[in-house]
Amino acid sequence: MPKITRELDGKVALVTGGSRGIGRAIAGRLAADGCDVVIVARTEADLKQAAGEIAGETGRSVAICPADLREPAGIEAALGELNTAFGRLDILVNNAGATQGGDFLELDDAVWEDGFALKFYGAVRMSRALWPLLTRSHGSVVNISGGFAQTPHHNFMIGGAVNAALTNFSKSLANRGLIDDVNVNAIHPGPVTTDRYEEILTTQAELEGIDREEVRERNLAASGVRRFAQPEEVAALVAFLVSPAARHIHGTSQVIDGGGAKSL
Image (cartoon, rainbow, N blue to C red):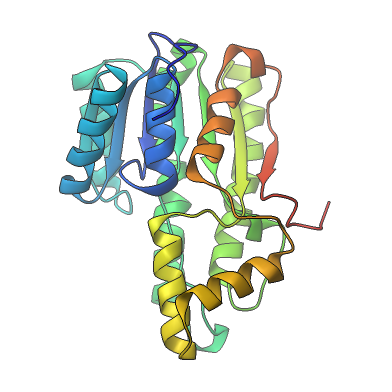
């Protein structure tokens, strides 16, 4: 449980992909800092569990919206739940989205289109739909991108392309934010120890016929970092970027990977 600080007391946040992993940690941290929260994800059971835990830990109101943000109807559902629950918005965190890796020659158009549908188009549509509310509150947007935006890899082309597009969009949206007084930043996490990362380890281990812990140790050694990040560390960075203390940090891409990326 994050320490309750109330630095964002009375604000309203919406977090996509907010039921598990990084998104769950972000929603919990923002609530601990005083926000009422809407969490959006596809699985209602996961949302209910996360909402109950966050509300119990922080005493804040947590609304849920089961929706597929790949489709415009999912965006409309999220906006409708936000208006019903709170009627305003101060913080938008676009976190939803996972992309498939693999051999470039085996990834067809449908896989590429699905990769862009949630993480990129979902963030674009959410930002557009909620921008009037954010303008009214002089709010903040944080887009969770990823390190492959800056370090392309031949086995993760879709994720790299999606993250690069989201990063470019974030910078452009920040320019619009200067006009409307809305802060916009992007975050590039390296590997983070979430349930999804554990699933990736399991898949790697099965494909290679080796123990999962062996894959974990090998990946860590190859990364050159001391350890992989915890979801709460990404959440802490989000909480800072949307706080009054960080208001002059705008239009940036913040890397949180323990020094793994060697590019500028």
